[in-house]
Image 1: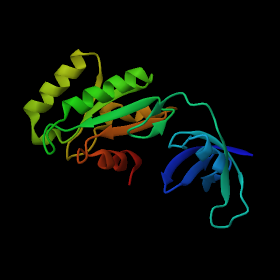
Image 2 (image 1 turned 30 degrees about the vertical axis):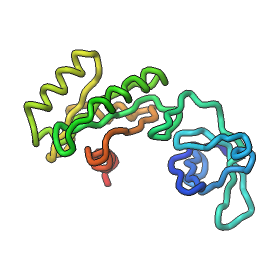
Image 3 (image 1 turned 180 degrees about the horizontal axis):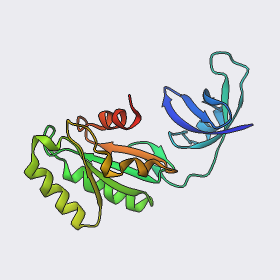
Image 4 (image 1 turned 135 degrees about the horizontal axis):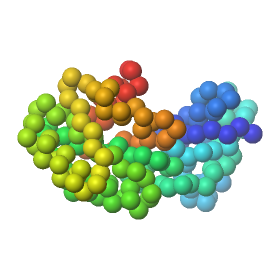
Length: 181
């Protein structure tokens, strides 16, 4: 039996990162469906060889979760980066505040990241000031990229980190900048 972490799930098939063997593809046992438990990204799982060349591994067990977010569906987070932009799309403060509450409830450290700061500097300053005064960590980035002085990469050292926010605010762009893609 091997232990790993689910890093991707699409259509009932999961990519599991195993410390001993890299990334493998697995399907969950039928017992999870019977128990109404759905594996999710971030779950720590035990896998075994399935004997099926198309899906070489099967998920045997899901370890107890530290926390679980339903939307986005992710488990065992230490930090959630909540993205917002001052314009394009217009900021959805209701969504941001809701995610901040959910993070607090699930014992996940929220970090606010304001993207597209070059498009509306005054609104960026206003948003940053409000949330920093409320005690939250706030980072910013613009079309010029991410300044290394922010120290953002330190958040990823030894932590499981997720991203959430409105469509179009730049979550994928941030992930690509941080991972070098």
